[in-house]
Image (cartoon, rainbow, N blue to C red; front, side, top):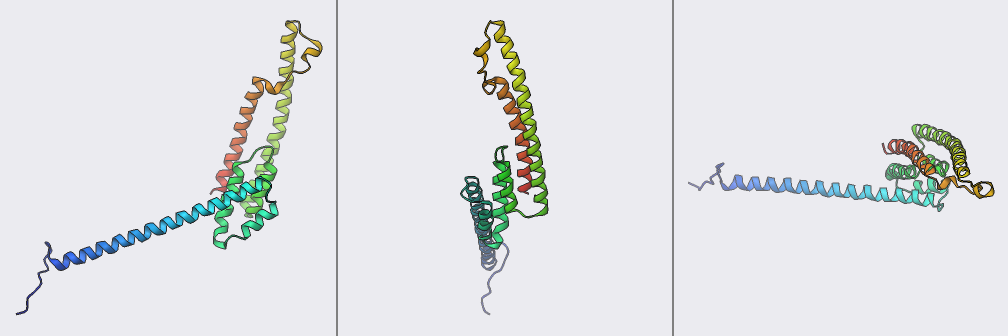
Length: 198
């Protein structure tokens, strides 16, 4: 009679080899999945770098709005969405009252979706309103501060041309107002960034 291989579950050789082959196959599958995940992560990082670089160059006036859109079009089709998303969010993070028009034009050049257009217009209106409120608040606060300072100096016997050069922007009240304004602008900026990163 020919010799039989024992195929017991308690350590018999053939089942042990099959199990090892299965484990090896599963391990290789995990390694391939990790490599694919790492490659996807690397590609996403590269797209973020490209988008952030476009935003930086645009804000530095190295690119016009037209150039910005053209640079986006030069990207591979499957990458355009990610680059546009990253670049528009990077622009929005730099939103200030002295550059909001440029930032919003750049966002609009990168993102043509109707929802983005609505957000850009809403943000533009909010910035314009905030800018006019800020100018009004600054003028009123400067007048109040100037009257208080002149009255205080008058009590000490100082007046005339000696009080002409009072500088409201060097006062603690000015710095307090700046913090309040920056907080309000930060909220506008935050809402836009969150929308663009969706």
